[in-house]
Amino acid sequence: MAFIQILIGSIYGGAEQVAEIAAEQLRERGHNVALNTYARAEDLTRDADEILLLCHSNTGSGELPDNIQPIYLHITRDYPRIAGRRYGVINLGDSSYSTFNDAGRMLDEAFADLGAVRIGEPLVLDACSGDNPETLTRDWVKAWATLL
Ligand SMILES: Cc1cc2nc3c(=O)[nH]c(=O)nc-3n(C[C@H](O)[C@H](O)[C@H](O)COP(=O)(O)O)c2cc1C
Image (tube, rainbow, N blue to C red; front, top):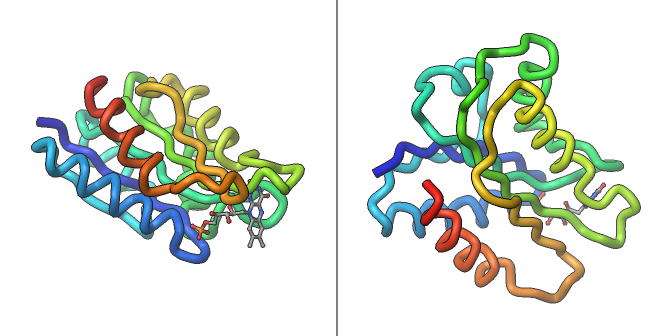
């Protein structure tokens, strides 16, 4: 059983819904999951064994939603000790934007730059793909959970 904190960044609630689906799937597999919509610096370092799952959308021109910005700023300005920390990535974007998933890559790179270790490949949900985000999320979580 793993302890997993899902750090949510959302403008219109899409990423929040996806995070809830992921949480439900992970709990069904016996994991202890906390959802965090307003993550702050201290939430990152409270428990070094906790796995972080970044679940956020893109906004503006490749920017992070306001409610996950503090995490990016903390990582890039304060350099918290997260080397070796395991994390996963779920991004929501829209490929009709030239800045498709730029914020997703930016946050992922910021974690990797400090030595955090990503579990598996990111799930990138493209709003204009026509795919069902719920199905994609369920399938991704099923595979991701085997890597924990
Ligand atoms: C004003 C606005 C700006 C957006 N900017 C981007 C962007 O730069 N890159 C991208 O990939 N998607 C962008 N999107 C698409 C959203 O990330 C996508 O619709 C996502 O599913 C929204 O999730 P949310 O409801 O959690 O905010 C934008 C959407 C809006 C409405």
